[in-house]
Length: 80
Image 1 (cartoon, rainbow, N blue to C red):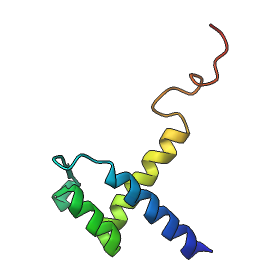
Image 2: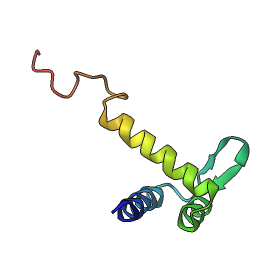
Image 3: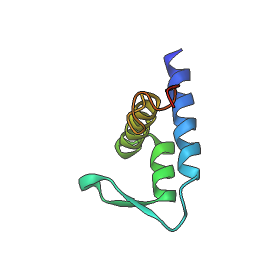
């Protein structure tokens, strides 16, 4: 079951990476600068950089789910 979850997460991250503009790069700390295609290749290969990209994407999605970017009560505040 865990292997299935890892594969699903990898597919989710790859789908999100596909939405990046082709002309923009991403810097990953001391690992360097990467194009969209570089990021996709690293995630597909499952190397250390690919694992870091997956970790960052999952942390972002968890923070989004938890309302970190919008405030805790914004979505369900009925007092207006």
